Length: 241
Image 1 (cartoon, helix red, strand yellow):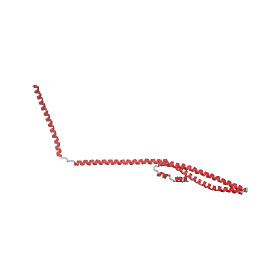
Image 2 (cartoon, one colour):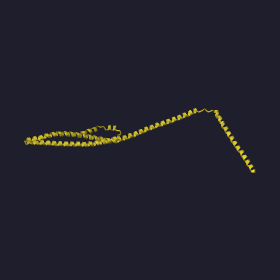
Image 3 (cartoon, helix red, strand yellow):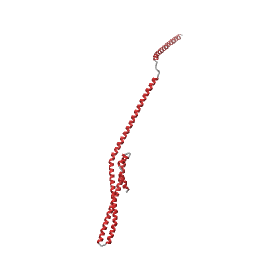
Image 4 (tube, one colour):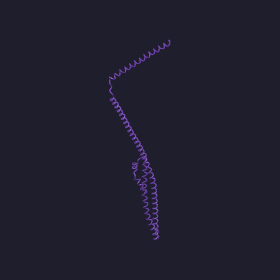
């Protein structure tokens, strides 16, 4: 029977191996449970069918056995009555039923064997479903913890990258400072040396310029006074006329 082969394959599968191969155990464990429950429903239906077949075979065998026993009884009665021909008829019919009895016994034996296999599969599937159901919450909790730890690890990697970038920024800043210091140093070296005597002369040149400016201001002031006197004298003469 193909159903027996199918569920034999299911039973030989290792649930832990399935979990190890899946990418997301939290989702896969739910899918496995759904599959197992579907299979369990099919196993129950098939087991019930095989058990019913076994019951029918046993009932047919019982009826055949009763009929054989009855024919044998009638054959005995016919012999007792001195009717051998009737006894032969009863025994002939009994022989036919005996062949049928052998076939029915094989049928019952096969049905009983199939029923035993299906019940074993049914019980194993029930056990697997119950076990996986009990482990599901634990598996999901472990997956959630693992995912959280992975996010923390990724955050740590990001922080390490940030520290590396900050370190690179600091190195570039230090390099820029060195470049500026070197440029200033070269500028100082390229500058024309100052003559101390010339600097000293500039000091006094500044004072001389100041004296000249003072003298010029004084002259401007005297000139203004002379012009004012002349203007006043001219106004006096004009009034006398």
